[in-house]
Length: 119
Image 1 (cartoon, rainbow, N blue to C red):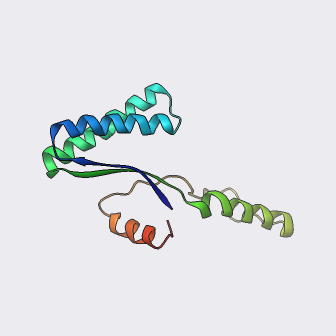
Image 2 (cartoon, one colour):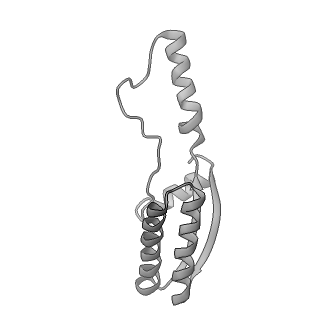
């Protein structure tokens, strides 16, 4: 489930500054150190700048995307299987439960899954 934190327009030069400030605030709220906050704010402002100058502007959403099944339920299920039956699925393998970048190529699928509360 995604939680929208802010939605800002990118319609004027000044909006790029607002986006940068918002990115820094969100990074601070998420607990990043000052140096990382600056890096995040810089990267997001470059995305906003490119969207404005090369893409005609638009909007930018700041959201936290939680994957409750992967981050909460799945580890408990795996530990229960280990305790009950002595098996541990995917032992030694990596199970991707962390963040994922949504790109233009998979944006439609990500939106569709999010609307169905799957991702």
